[in-house]
Amino acid sequence: MVEWLAGNRIRGTSTERTAGTPEVPAVAGGWKELARTTLGSNGDSIDVSSLADKRYLMFLLDSRSNGTAISTTWKANGSTGNEYSFRRNHDGTEGDATTQPSAATSWTSIVTNAFGVGYAANKSGKEKLFLEHEVYQNTAGAGTAPTRTENAFKWTGTDVIDQLTMHNSSSGDIVSGSELVVLGYDPADTHTTNFWEELADVPLSSAGTVLSSGTFTAKKYLWVQAFIDSSGGNVNDAFRCGNGSVDNQGNYSYRFSSNGSADTVNSTTKSQNDIGDFSNIANGQFINMFIINNASNEKLIMCHINEGKSGSSSPTRLEIVGKWANTSDQINIVEWRNPASTNYSTKSFIKVWGSN
Image (tube, rainbow, N blue to C red; front, top):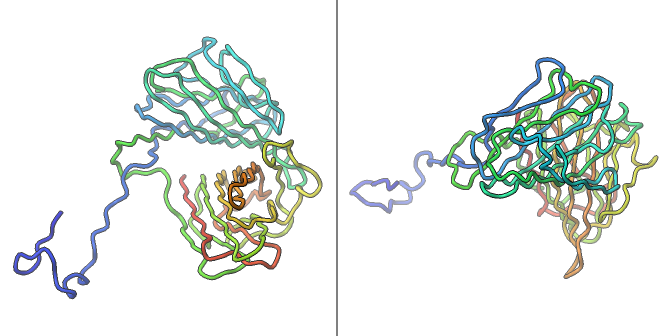
């Protein structure tokens, strides 16, 4: 839109150009909530249907057990035929199966809370490909590390996905309050009803050993990204979170895999003051993290990290799942810190998105 200034001029004087409040266009596109189902009573399935036709899907699972084993399996469009195959890794152990009636995610039965984030390529006329990660609370408390599953599966159906179902194939129940949220994205979308709301966007203003989001509005689902850069030499990083201020009192546990190796989980990854303390980063580190942030449940965290190396050297790949063993507060602040003395540079930043 062209705004005509005094004398029918497009180009104004310096006074005219700085006067008034500029019009800022709304951000269009992005992930939009298509549908969600929240269980009102215990059951064996969470079904989300009548999904709009979107090229890409993202889904968020908040699943809770009644203390008896449940197993996560996925179905698309209500299909019960042997139309699924999958490959999964559970705590470092790989397995696969073909010609299945559903796509199984959990390697062992879940008896506690679980959090999952997944994606689907949803092009008509093509088999549907899915990626999904889940983290399981395991025994309550920071003395026990969570477990994890990575799942790549496909449905051989070629119809657009309009229904997604998480089904329990074990003896327990998925309890009331558990939910499945399905988001959609299409490059042609122009809506402004984005699911993910920006909560924090903080560049490191001066070199230092702490990169903090500051306090933000707490949301049930959190998506955190960060870039950590060294001001010179190697730096370490360790993750903390909290409510109002970060917790450093031994309430974290985690497990991790480096470059596809067997998971590391031992006394040094339980009842810790933070998650990580990954070391010797000199060429930048990109972090992508999701958190389920229910006040009354332990906070479950999944994280993927790319640690850059110099020149043509291959980067280091880290996969981490962790938990903050707090069952009374929602997270409204997160940070990375360097336990050593070398500073993070001002290229470092942290961004947080969230939604209920």
